Every structure is written in structure tokens, then in C-alpha cells.
Length: 81
Image (tube, rainbow, N blue to C red; front, top):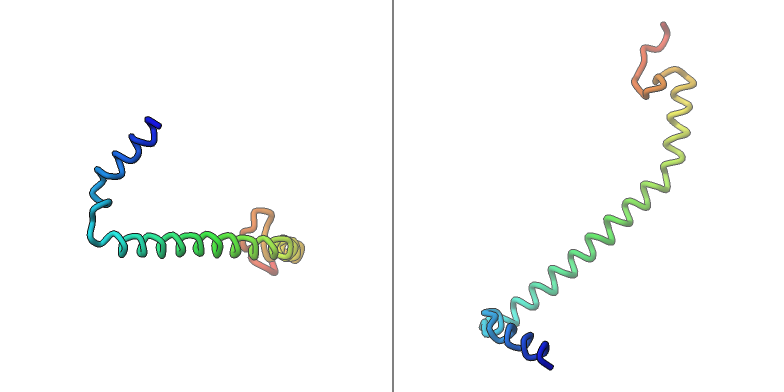
């Protein structure tokens, strides 16, 4: 019970508790949190999409190395020497 009273005291002392724009601020915070979640979801989705093509990328590197367009360090070589 003591902990609950302490928390309530901190809430009441917080300047945001009596702010006349509290509703607007909560709305903005909710919108911001929604955008942050959407950003994280999109970031993960893009990462997953890139991983999907990674094996194809490695195979293309191997082909370029076999054709001697790039060396073992993936540096472009002069073809035809």
C-alpha cells in the first residue's frame, strides 16, 4: 500500500498531471508510438527481404569470380590481360 501511495504522490506532483493540454499530448504520444512501431516493423521487413536474396547475391559473386571480372577480394579486375 505504501508503494501505491508513493506512486500516486509522484503522479500528482508531475507537472504533466495538471497540464491543460494533457489530452492533446497523450494523443501525440500515442501517434508517435504508433509510428515508432510501424518503423520497426518496416525495418524488420526490409531486412528479411534482403536476406531472401543473399544466396543469389553470393552465387553471382562466384560467377563473376569464375569469369575473372572480380578477384578473390571482390575487387574489379582488368578483363583480357
